[in-house]
Amino acid sequence: MKEYELTVLIKPDLEVDIEAPLAKLRTIITSNGGSISKEDNWGKKKLAYRIKNEDFAMYVYFDLSLPADALLKISNTLNITDEVLRYLLVTVDKKGRMALEEAKASASENDTKEKE
Image (cartoon, rainbow, N blue to C red; front, side, top):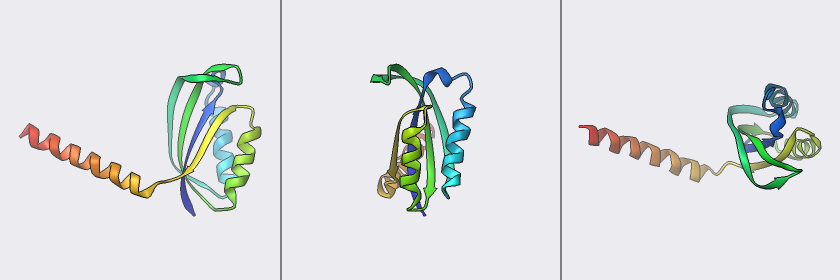
């Protein structure tokens, strides 16, 4: 199974009961053999341009592990899901993630040296 990042834009009127569409997304992922390692709700944000007559959307980010055959099934399901305005499903860039972790480690190391 490969690692993927999924960012989903959910209709803003579902902000009050965000758990229902999130549960639906989790079910779509797990029913296709995937597992969620991280979930992060970024909240309601203004869109750069209107999507389906909406100016705002709820942004939710997932780190996933998926089998190869699940990608098409999940994409097709998200395309017809009413709550989802847009989504982006990409493979994880391991080199980029390693570089980010190294940058964070060196930044925290520099902060410790400055405090001494």
